[in-house]
Amino acid sequence: TTLSHNKKTGPISNFMSESKTCPDTCPYLESNACHAKQGNMRIHRDRHDQGKYRSYSFMELLGLIPTAIFSRIFRCFVSGDLPGKGDRIDGKRLRKLAKTIDESGKQAIAYTHKPLSGVHKRGDVKLRRANRRAFDQMMSETKNFTVNVSCDSMAELDRAMDRGLDAVVVVPHDTIGKKLVSPGGRRGLVCPAVWSDTKCSDCGKGSPLCAQKGRNIFIGFPATGQ
Image: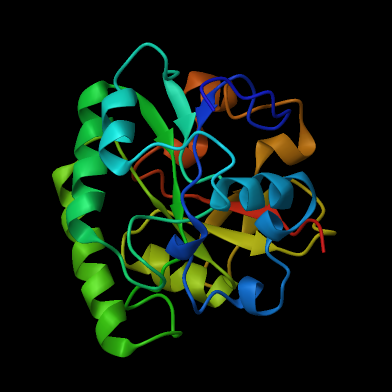
């Protein structure tokens, strides 16, 4: 979508990737609690997977991002995940995507729920290690682009941040207040769109928190939907 009408993101570009990119070991898929499997997102996701929407190949997407059609701030993987089927990260494609975004001078809001060694304890051990190598290589080659590691618990969150990774975490739906602190003493902030009129398009005074590399604070997202 080159110009979203979503109230949370604001008027920015965004894209989703195929359902097969979602990690097989995602606990929300297993419990059918995934946000993309509910409401309007489910409708759009199903239509996308059924070929009812105009889709772009990976290379076509890379060609579109640097153009004026795509907004300066944009959202990656509204549903779906990084390139690669299931739990696996396609390191080659991820590096191409990161390079394109980095060289475009734009800011991308991106997350991954793929299992990474040192953070997650789900999935195949060897695959987690391969994913971590691919992820670290991508992050070392890009100056401005960051992919937030999605964590399902404060324990995962602390492990991710202890390893220098930018991270986000799901928190209880009835979380009160703006500020958070992990058991390991890491400072966090509940997504500003939850407690204010902030949208992704104007978060961080034009530099969204989730797009800032090496920010040293985590972002908490209260559980929604089912």
